[in-house]
Image 1 (tube, one colour):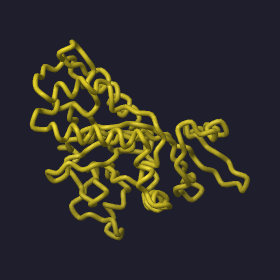
Image 2 (cartoon, helix red, strand yellow):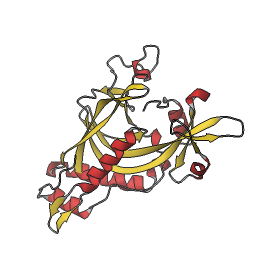
Image 3 (cartoon, helix red, strand yellow):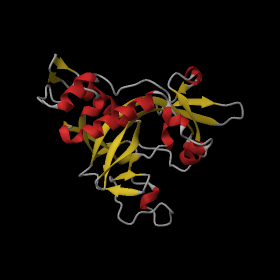
Image 4 (tube, rainbow, N blue to C red):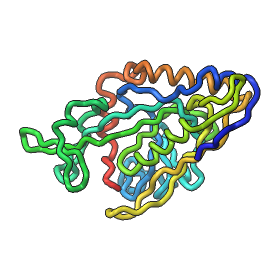
Length: 264
């Protein structure tokens, strides 16, 4: 996915070198209330005519931009500029116990020590009232997606079988090399555009769609302002800014409205 080296000589190269290695942070924000990019799966409400979220033009495998409920052809994908990464655990009631969102926990939550791995490889908590919940690891990729010709701030939350895609993406970012005035260096995450599309996969539960991520190109001199905006967004996320901008309770309301993923 990543190119070994990229030759580039202009003002943008100096900015890449100045911020070498940035864009991969380590905080535990309340991320899922941010506009998201997700995949429309076979059981997604966007495909059900009876659902208020129904989108007439949507198809299985399309990408969904939740801020405007816009469906994008998954085979074509979208252009995405990563700016920040972190991970956490989302707690869900088990589907066989009714399903539903419970809470978001930091990646080092002590609840992990209390969880038991079941035969479906889920980290399950059994509570005093008999209810069971699952701690689901989630990798969060913040950045800018090109939606209808405009760059929009958003987050891509990856879990279950998507985690392997997330790890490969992080590896591609960290393995990208450029040649600057001081020699070879690793540019920041927001130095390169990536194409986010979808691909069909099979699991024991049937067919579903996963992400496919390929590196496109580095930003050019005309995109210097976008690079600077992404740098500020990265710093904002690193400082926990995504938490601070949310009204109390908004995250719970938004998460409770989404379907618990049950594939892969």
